[in-house]
Amino acid sequence: MKSIACAGTISAKGELLLDEPLPQNQPIRVQILILFPESTDSDDLTPTQWNKTVANNPSFAFLNDPEEDIYTLEDGIAVSYKG
Image (cartoon, rainbow, N blue to C red; front, top):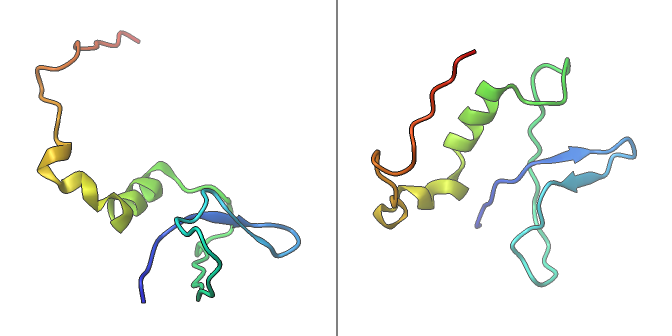
């Protein structure tokens, strides 16, 4: 079976609401695995959890392709923050 990763929310009615549409343009039966956070203190991921999730998501594997590496350290303008 082919797999994809996506995020969503379970509504008060128990309905699964996806953050983005699925890349499927025709009706098809699927199997769904739902992963719940271990802690229910907050519905939102911490920045660390979000970064870890995105870093391990195969949907972003294309970014490892050398053709996607289009910027260098010389691009842009340095920013200094005086706060």
